[in-house]
Image 1: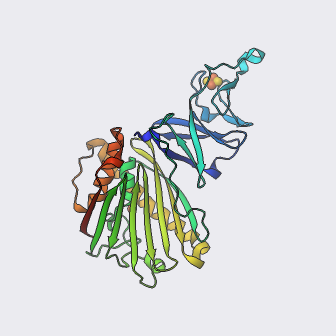
Image 2: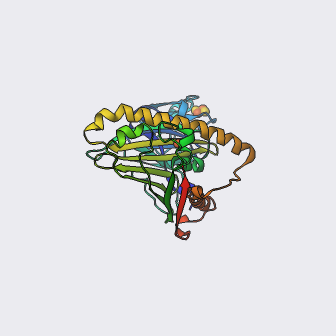
Image 3: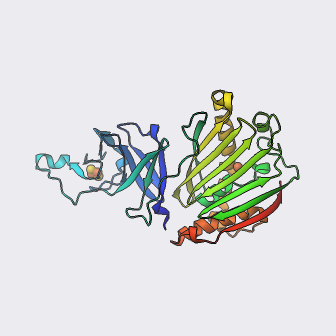
Length: 340
Ligand code: FES
Ligand SMILES: [Fe+2]
């Protein structure tokens, strides 16, 4: 199994309008992304075969992509279908074909897979409750100056919340929490107990009735985290993030906040968006700081029991990095107490 076997988001569907081309980086590969005449997303290596201009700086006309330098035109298969300097003498040949990648469109996102022959046919992750009646989704996209592992770990890390998001999300109250952390089949499931309304001002809306909080965090291979909060009726929330590796220290994170707040669904949208973006900005800052120190001194970490989630996530991503299948790691379930 390789990281290139999986599907990575390159844009929300509505961002890739007809006759536009987007430049993206996934796992270090440069991509030019556009829609063919029939609307299908196309991903080509972002380099012209002629003299190496970037195709993403070109333009799309009739579903074909034209290089900005000398005007070579590429179809959805990457084949060169016009060379202006050859005029009427132009003849298409097999040799002139840009490298192309498989694409899919699902849940309002466009996905690209880099492997031509993956070890297994995976599907893009299905975003929880996306588009279902009674559920609203707010989407935000943010770039982090850190790697996928540290981003994913941050999104399901409780101990940082009191320090990085004071007041908004959680105040430090020297409260003991218990969690069960389970590694199974390439995923990590964390269930929290004893969690009361220690969630700062957000709780005034989220949990007015002081109902029991059900909170679980999940990591799915290779790059997905999903946080679920449920507090009584009509307060159900998923924060699902797909962390897309651009380079070793740049990750583009697509976050769906999908919630069911009953009659408040529509009214809550701007509030949900503002809160999500505010919290994420604080995480971008701290992950950037961590990224700088890691670039200089590496990732010799010193873990506490509260970091068990991260150890499991690292074991899964580490296995993929070695070309192994993390689903064959032994199942493990650990009960951990920690203080927040
Ligand atoms: S470099 Fe692309 S057409 Fe010349
Ligand atoms: Fe955070």
